[in-house]
Length: 164
Ligand SMILES: NC(=O)c1ccc[n+]([C@@H]2O[C@H](COP(=O)([O-])OP(=O)(O)OC[C@H]3O[C@@H](n4cnc5c(N)ncnc54)[C@H](OP(=O)(O)O)[C@@H]3O)[C@@H](O)[C@H]2O)c1
Image (cartoon, rainbow, N blue to C red; front, side, top):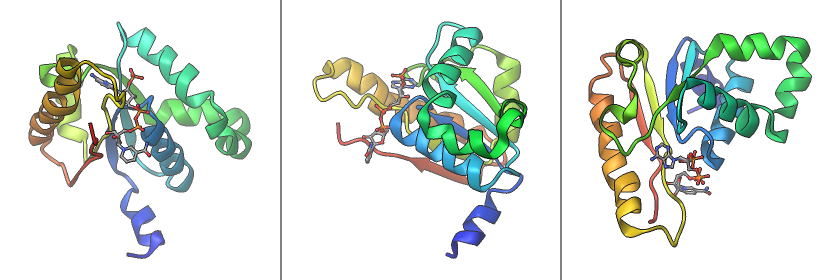
């Protein structure tokens, strides 16, 4: 498929990304914001104690990194409002049912609006405890699949698999 058609596909779409503070997700996030600013919304699952901590992690570990320099140059002072209009940080953990998203209103909103899921949440530590690795990489993947089945508009589910 031509690159322009792929970019066009994402116009108006709502994407849910897990593992949003991770290496692959950050690269995907930056690229999609850069090439398709007309995407509708991005829900980003972030492990944190509460919404405020999730927002803090999003800014410190994702948006304020060197990776986003090109976007900063492109948008200047408009970058913050642009990002705020697109990104919704979601506090959660794939090890739990409903991905640990305790806000039922937010869950419903996601089930109604999400078109695409990119699941890159994983433990990538080679020396991870077996039960922890199972809880995230196997059970977690299952929880994301269960969550995906509830998304009434879902068009695409990408699971970035782990070798662990
Ligand atoms: N990097 C590569 O070149 C590459 C190539 C092929 C395949 N992969 C696969 O792609 C996946 C992602 O790789 P990566 O390099 O992006 O890994 P990474 O940098 O280690 O990121 C993993 C992400 O998953 C999150 N996470 C871990 N446990 C979680 C949980 N219980 N609930 C929610 N989020 C959780 C981490 O959050 P925290 O920040 O809270 O820990 C982090 O955001 C892995 O399955 C990896 O095997 C990677």
